Amino acid sequence: MSLLPDFLAARLPGTLAEVEEVVEVRESVGASEAADRFRPPDSGEEAPDLASAIRWVERRFIPVRTALEALSERLPDLFAGQAPTLSSLRSTLETQQVLPCLREKASAHLTKLPPPLGFGPHHSRSWCGVDVFQHDMGHAPP
Image 1 (cartoon, rainbow, N blue to C red):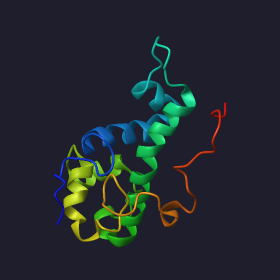
Image 2 (image 1 turned 30 degrees about the vertical axis):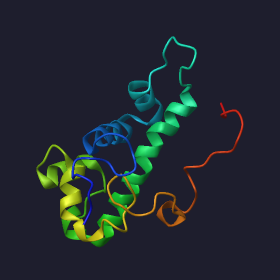
Image 3 (image 1 turned 30 degrees about the horizontal axis):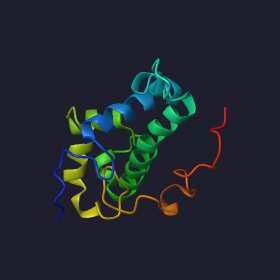
């Protein structure tokens, strides 16, 4: 049981629908285009550079993709042999908001899935094999 409402993202600000929108754009057009759309550079002094905007997108995309891959192994009937993407699940589940629907259908696995979909550990090497959330100190690479 969780006190987190079904529509909120775990360990990220905002809702699952907002995370889903970022992930869907990232799936379709790539990281830099998604970064330009969701984190555009401002004219102010503290405008995010492209590298930090891409990291912001990837902090949403990688855990969702990892959760979808894990669910495709645990709930193969749900994916019906399709790729673990939001667009394929949208047609299978016949819903506009996939992540809240998946949270309901995968309720038995939420403690093992990474946030923002599940409630498992955020920084776990077991999700993707490397610690993708931490970058080296210093200036962001080009």
